[in-house]
Length: 149
Image (cartoon, rainbow, N blue to C red; front, side):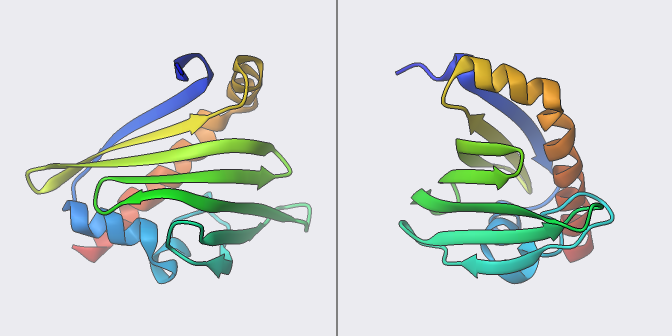
């Protein structure tokens, strides 16, 4: 089934080996350092990195409430793909997030797909600034990776 009309895609190339980028995505001690917008912190509530495993992260928002990111791992292909069902409350619910990793010499090509249940919901999310939000998170990931080299 074609998902392209309901998918938002972000492509990045990280100047870091694929093993390091994969580790940054899969280990809780690394996730807390980049999975958030600039100026906020992430608290890991759950992180079981296996198919069927759950993840849940909380980030305080300026209004004092927590922004909750949570999901379940559906598919994991070592150094290639992570697919999760995901909710990002209070803004986004019922999406799939697909993270694709491809070795490119000593760099990593990274593709991030947010697959929405409907095209209308995808368009609504674009208007809310999903690209800017994730873009800032991936900027933080890029900085984190540079510090690890």
